[in-house]
Length: 435
Ligand code: SF4
Image (tube, rainbow, N blue to C red):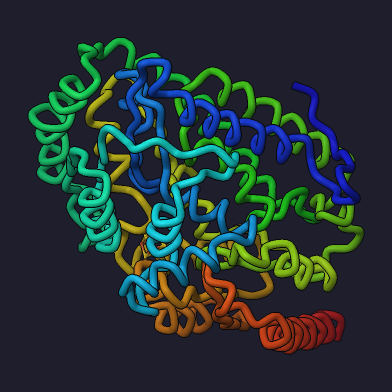
């Protein structure tokens, strides 16, 4: 794969962004034809997904959050959410859930314009968000299909103990794998799992190099807006495949090239010329106005150098890799280590480390109105991080896929005042250093 910045419809995109888009749409095509081809479909969530294990049973993988995200980017989620609210779901319910339910009510047409078939299995790996459980309870009734649940203990004390790991492994052996065998009709082959895990670890190595490239000045990537494209394949239906390993090798080569040339990130309007502010961002982005939101940052020379959201499908930058030598234990550790499964002090430590190692000028929270899993405790985190790092923190509120909760003028105003405050602070410290 030869990756370079290319222009499509007047929007600049890195080739990697186009490739990941093609991978995601190929998965929708695979879903559309799965049943005709005699394949089974599993639905599963991004955090704690057991993609390599599902691949061992030839399941085609459907990820409901990605369907909602795609609906948001395609401006369809607003209508789906209204539909779900009309049938009684409250305004406070996670909008990914309502987008999914609304999509089902309106004929279950996927982002490729073709019907999304009913899954054969709902595989819930429970990693810290209670909504996941309620979401699958609702769709299980609609689909009338089987659900299997992997209970993952919360990291309340910020550590993974042997007991916690064994608890997950036992469920994999005694409940999850037998269910996958029965539904798929395919016998489990642990060597097949080892092969996929080997591919995962290679891709994870390169993903980490890409994310950590943002320690350079200027950063060659935007680790939030660009980061969501980079994480796309590994967070969804592709982790463990050779195609994904090749994608991350090529992506790292592309980013390495940008470092050598001293280039900044590619934005939809071309390469960023001047990096003025470096930020760490907590919380998912808004999808309904994704490009307008990003523009509010790059227009001001603001680059996100690290974010918690690009860890939601796996925290790899502190050393964890899928380990083919311990196939089931490594799946357990992956689930236990998910960002949403970590307690607040661990999240704060992680974000403070980013602030320091990535030499950030500020910390910004994009609080998502309907995502309690991320939003709970964010103000507390903000105060703690501000105090520990001495860097200014900012707070905005938007939503994932409900367009009613993205107020462009309001968000822009708040961001501009925040960026101004950072620049003033930076100027004062530069003066002090010069004096
Ligand atoms: S509440 Fe947040 S983490 Fe949970 S399903 Fe909704 S968006 Fe995902």
